[in-house]
Length: 143
View 1: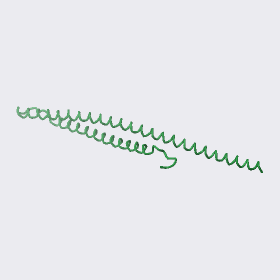
View 2: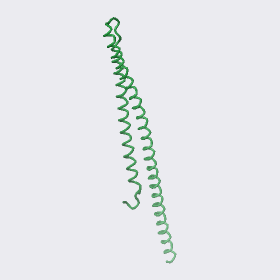
View 3: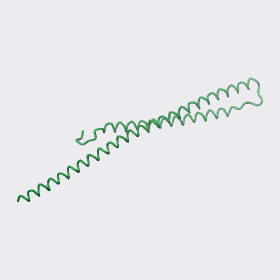
View 4: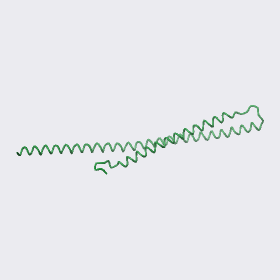
């Protein structure tokens, strides 16, 4: 490790990796939520495409109603899955927010460390210049 290196650099890299993974999870969750909405729309179209026949035999009428009930059940299930997908998106967003906060906290620590190091180096350089000036002045006074 470098002499003046940020000792928590590995932690910062891990936080960045966590945030990247959380971003990817949000993207996947949003894709799944979008697919769930598409499934709802498909079930709605299927249901709308099967109207109750106006003039049909009792058997045809019963078969149509049974098919519509099955489609309505599939639609209800698709709506439930879409709700779960939306909740998953929300959970993944919260995880992303948490990961971003943790990463930013580490970045702030690194920024403070860098600022402290620069101030320390500047103070040391200033002291060295002062020492040289004092030493040169002392030599001039002795001569």
